[in-house]
Length: 392
Image (cartoon, rainbow, N blue to C red; front, side, top):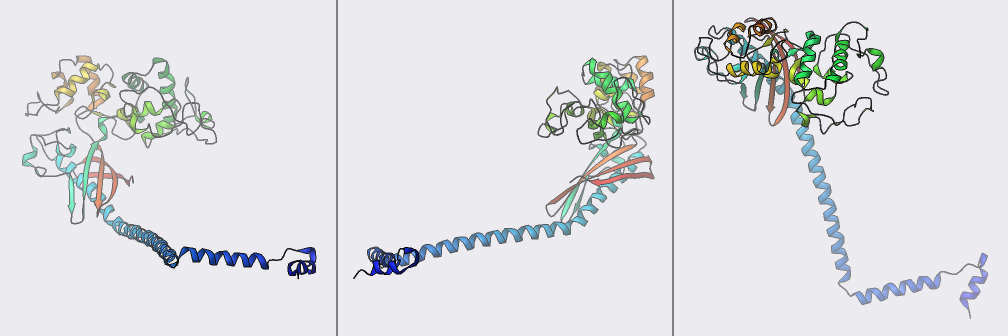
């Protein structure tokens, strides 16, 4: 009797039966289990248990890490208030230090040898309240480190004349053919009108200067020096100078190119950021300015600028013949400074600073934040906080 044939003939569509293949599969499974032996099932169970333990370990580790991150974030959030107060306290301490500095009659100047600038202190510091002052604040669960920089060590770009801007580019060794466009574009950015200077640029140029990113000329004083990077002709190399590492890993707008492309160009010894500031009283402090900044003064030669910097480096003895300058006229002690230079220095320079930038690095329970405060010092009792913000 042919069961398979009879059964298949009775099925619609003459389908192939499944009874025999099922029996064959069951037979093969029994044969495999017999060959594998009694220990195979235990081995398989052990593998399954190990895999389960591994998966659970990974899940537990991920959960523990997530909880650690959440705990850290909550801890940092609780430290925010303490960080901000540390930052503000650092600025207030800087205000007090700058006020006390004005009280020292033997030091009628602001110089790099003084406590506020990180120096050991001048000839009158030992008998003042600044004798044992440290530029930091200690608290039970953290500290704040304070750095004070006067802004009069650079020239104010908002009041810089065409001659000073050209001199700055000469100090940087910019090609003479590039100077006029750069200078006039900067002046067009600052001046209050839309009149275009020769090879300059006003708002109509910036509407298409960066594709799909139109903007207008500032037509007013700069609030931040980084605005220079928005001006036609100003490249990152011009802005940063020898600090090339500050931007080598970043992408910037190339001249006439597309937003986001990197630029490669000449690297200058100093950059515009080393020479200018957007906020100061307009005078250059000859006790804190670099030789490059001093070269922005009309008639100043590189040799005279270097001589001024070298002569102030000695220790002050009260005579005015050594160390920092007590008044601008004392530059006459520098052999390289001619009489015509003295007149220009007296017009453009001072020995005091009125605007200071305070950097406070606060740390609470291992969590850090950098704060910046800008101070305007009018007298001992009038030191105003012009701005306060954090950078990270």
